[in-house]
Length: 409
Image (cartoon, rainbow, N blue to C red; front, side, top):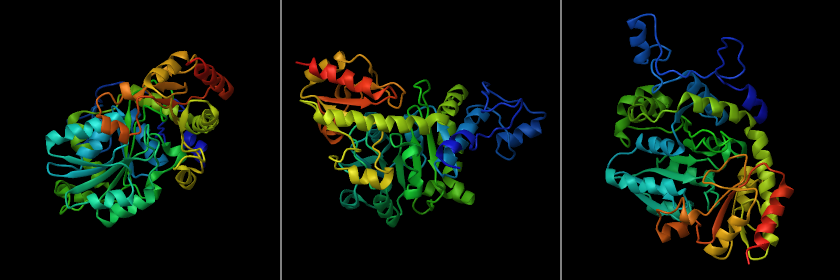
């Protein structure tokens, strides 16, 4: 099946009870069984079934299976938020004394997380750009993972995933990709060498801005040897499912970062229109960024533009599409605020991936806890505005931004 057909008719684990066409909401805390013997087997993963929704829920399971199939992984674990997904994926493999190599152009919350991991004895080495030239000199015996966003948010830099994956695997290091801004519509990172793919599914996967969630997808291809990852020794018997088995039976289960059934249901509904939405979002983003190129006093950053230094990578991996985020520089913080205040259609909000166009001033919000150096490395300046483009009619968006820019001075 092609992309849009798979979104609708792919694996939604549809064990039909009354002929429902999507996975129903199992809004319960616990599941009863006919005997304590059966519950013991289910609870200890020796028989199929569900015992407690923190550990597993049919609605959540349906969402996990759909995303795993869509991303060409062997399985997935859904989490309460995108940040929970990043945290759980990393803590599943890291311990005190380990090091991470990460791109500095990350979402502000992820940068803050790496700061928090210092308290656990886990150090992060940041590179301005996740390239072979910048990553390779930092690799040591302590390096246990390379982590990057495929399309930076809001720097909009694109990683040459195949080149970095080759370097990582040559050194027995897994490559973790946050593909939130790329989405499965543009690329399946596992097909290009990623070992684990992470999404803040609150964003484009959900699409309606109505449910917080995250998801971790495992390729099953990385060899988690006990010599290099001693905490995986007891899970080696699970073969290619070692990462997922340890994650589901350990840190994820014990921390309680589970996804609520209602949010999983909303994601199951939202994902069915992902292809249609992304097609429109990418089209709108290109047209709006082309307008900004001709707007006086505005500097635009969008990978789909030929002027972007990442345009060739967008052609290589995304068929020339640039995603649905644009950043512009207005000349000063004051001008940026005036521009935002002059807009009539976009909402001033922190989310991305909504059907509505959203704008934000990153330096004063999602990067408020970052140092000046971290902001610059992430492509965040005092005059930066991040635009999460929506599905509105493009003429209306262009006219609204044109009027807002003309009223700045």
